[in-house]
Image 1 (spheres, helix red, strand yellow):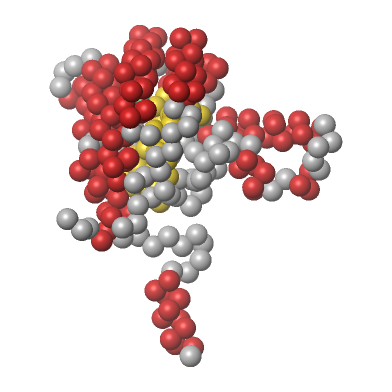
Image 2 (tube, helix red, strand yellow):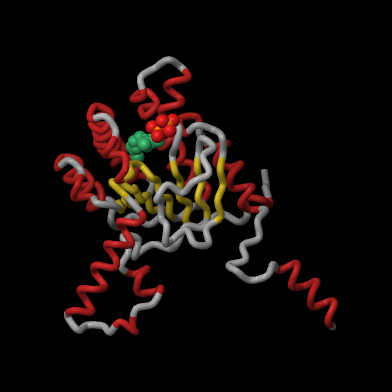
Length: 251
Ligand code: FPP
């Protein structure tokens, strides 16, 4: 069925996957069951995004702050991540998906780092979609990382302070190779960015749904994309319809 609201598909979609714990609590289950169900939602979302023609999908899978969770939960999340990478490699190869990762990857357990590196290498020439996992990721830490690199270049005399502009900062973020997200979805109703893509989100559209992440599926994704399709992105300018009305008045 032709859906005109799906004609404007975001190039880069980023998702704050929230609500796994609540999903489990509501069922009287341990939190890890929510995360396990969350992996199913990840699989369905990745497949749906590829089918719908999204070119970059960034998933906030583990924040820097998440290290403060109980040890058992952190280690269960690392195991889930490892299993996901191991099981999905063939699917990624079959579907032309390239894996990338942003964050303090060096803080992850060695086993997960090795698996990530292997999957990124095997999928590096895939061109249909980039799946970018934010792991041990924090937006402020990312900005500090970029500032450190730029300060180093200044000290080495490679650039002058007056050469520093928004573009140079963007090129030194973890996401240097990626465009800014057009749309950021957050599940479970919270109205926060939670330290996610702070620099890159400057002009992103935001979509908040009350659906908990483990219940997120293709239908929920399509609802978000339809909502995005109805919006007019203005990047600080006046809207197109408003501009036309103004032209009509003055001419
Ligand atoms: C937020 O729910 C979710 C996380 C902190 C982790 C997200 C991880 C997954 C979906 C699974 C592993 C990921 C991949 C890519 C295989 P929460 O625990 O904060 O939920 P709550 O706010 O209801 O407690």
